[in-house]
Image 1 (cartoon, rainbow, N blue to C red):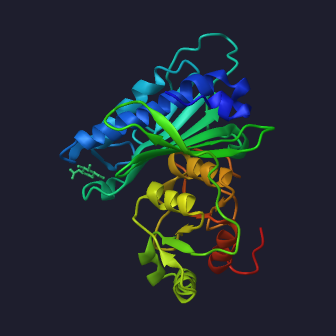
Image 2 (cartoon, rainbow, N blue to C red):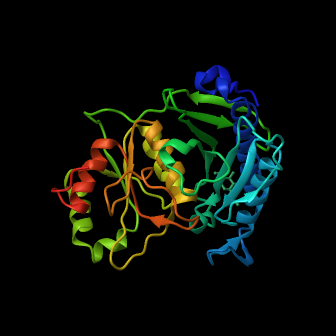
Length: 328
Ligand SMILES: *[C@@H]1O[C@H](CO)[C@@H](O)[C@H](O)[C@H]1NC(C)=O
């Protein structure tokens, strides 16, 4: 791995294991997953279901196994859980009774199963939490880093780090191809832009819900009437990365009376919220208006909707969905 995280991020000086082992290992794993996807001529059902009852694809299993193998090479990772195996379990035996750095890693190995068949861009979502568990902890303090792997024509990764007492950082890294574990920083400070915006982008997830949710329909009409540009693939990672790269965007995945909350807080919402916040944006629960990272997780299966991206757009969309009387 050619990136010297501790030089790049002064905050990491006190986190030797995070910058010399956990982050480089996870980035290397993203290169490995990209290579495995390139070599997978067929994307097929593995014939199994994960604990949530979702069908597993052969590539889900490959990505899960590669990440598990990576984590077993990181002594500071005490526990891990994933969308494919959603229970926090020990990864490495504690090496000392009071380790100076101890993490739990929660990940969605391959997000975007429904669009991988047509070879659209998919991603990996990883959250790194201080201590041996992510549950019943304040996410805004305890989740210290998040990584998004992006598997498209190119392989890139977004790394966000937020440690107490230091400026949050978000950077974009280009990964080597064909299994080469090399990496190059292509954007040292990923930032969403401030107004005025040249082009405004919107990503309306679960658009069908607008048929029975008048407030969502009014929000969509507002985007269309105000000449926002539609950028939506159905992959959470590429849809958010679009905003991060273009410097503007609002992603809306509302929960309505007839469409249940689908996104998992531990494996999807919390890590993407950290990345968006470290890039200067906002991520809230569209049902309550609360920050995604405000509420502790009760279980590995907590779910919610998502409204995130450029802060002023998130506030505007929130007013449409929750009502202008709400100010949070
Ligand atoms: C999928 O797309 C990538 C480029 O994004 C390409 O290299 C690869 O060959 C494609 N795979 C298949 C099976 O078409």
